Image (tube, rainbow, N blue to C red; front, side):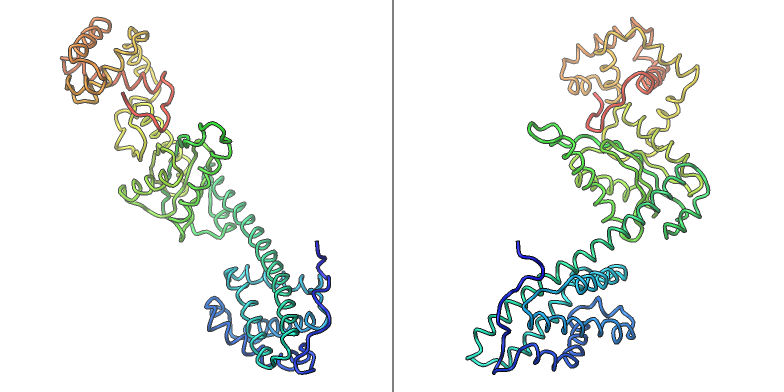
Length: 421
């Protein structure tokens, strides 16, 4: 591997008998002004800088860069560490100022392009070998400079993002604890919204996670990364706070969203990560986020346990089921009504389907892939074992309540990819 200061080519290129680096040094003051002007024309990001910064720091950086390139033309050696450190520090300042990386790299390439154009205009056909040498040294200089620019920029962004992420996670922790979040929000540089939309997510597996020969943990991380990216993309003006793992977690959205907008967001997130999502949602002011997180999780759990399947679920969707799932003597007594069916899962599934199909025996049979007479037989057996008759209105209400209590108390939570019977 070639060392950073290895010779690029010898001897020093000359145009018309004059060393090229001397020509460039003579042009440097005027070129610095021209390059700075062109930066504003070609790279809009530099328009945001104060005029005094452009005339001062940026102009000095440009002229110093031209003189550093002249030294490369003279010696045939790439810039030393001192010069590369200066470039890295300058790039880090641009990163801190929010100038895009492509604009920072583009500024050096624009400067090199203008320098080359001015120098080559003075070359004659007889100077062709020296032109090739000069171009070779120009490419070597650009390669070294571009690497230094990228290094300084990325290191600064990683540091800034790391600090910002720590502050954001501290704010999220404070909100989840139920304390006063204002100081944590100030440290994170975020303005607390009047209300947060609180999402509790259960994330199903991506197909790649069960595919033979595919590393499951890698597939799961990709799934989660795509979900995070979609969240950030959809909320550029107010990035959500999130605590997520491969199988789910909590998201706080700082902007108010309608039900339709929330449902559309959940659909986009599911498409982005390629996995089914069961999402419970509610809203609360910052001081009440901790309670809202618990409620959103309960909504999600009730929706999953009662077979409502993937998608968005609000409290209004599961009002009765949520209330019936609350612990207490009545909850346990309701669940106990179906104890005689504990070893008859086909009877429980038939009652669930019968209720979900609006008491229509033919639709129930089609859902269960059985004959309608089989549905009638199973409903009669349910009545015989429990004393609850599906033909009587009061018993139907009791059956519904008992199923809800049973499903939310004893049955394992159905995954995001599973619906009802």
